[in-house]
Image (cartoon, rainbow, N blue to C red; front, top):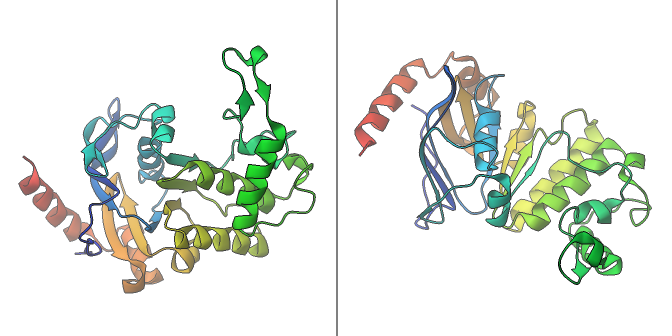
Length: 274
């Protein structure tokens, strides 16, 4: 049976216990348990319909779990709606990036969180554009992100890789505890994928916890210290990336490995139920 990576003595940053999610008669997640430790970079993989997106959306606060418990730093918590997850330091970068094409990087950085004078309705607030520019540029420089003309260029004039860098940097700036990345290198070329992966690596070195959903399995061993495989709504495997290989991960994804394991895992989970 694929064993979970050894837990550190410290409390997990986030602990999911027996998380299930149903949409009518469809069971998208079935008893998923997962510990996320500070500084983990977890590659979340699985075939289409395996439950990856549902799990990410529960962590992002977009879905409520039908059953199960979520703990943040040892305390039972609710992550929905998304604004609550964001308040708790969890940010998500979806494939569409959620960037305003006509805005520059700075304006997108603070979208909906503008630094302003005054209070009350927006008409009575004055945006501090220079302050936002200074903060955004300082953060981009800290992450070694160098995009020509970034101060004024709208993101619609940036390449796909540059837009991805801006979106991830924004997510990391606001997501102090957990950053969720949905296919961050999808549709990118080799060079741009390498730049995005380099950024993810730098963020992990700063101690940020990251979950990366990806179909590019080669990227797992470039940035992830753990690989979690989902299959048919269940966690099929949770392994240190250094203890596994492409062949084994593919075997768990396809079900060639793990049929007996899933039965054993279900038995262990049943015994663990209060």
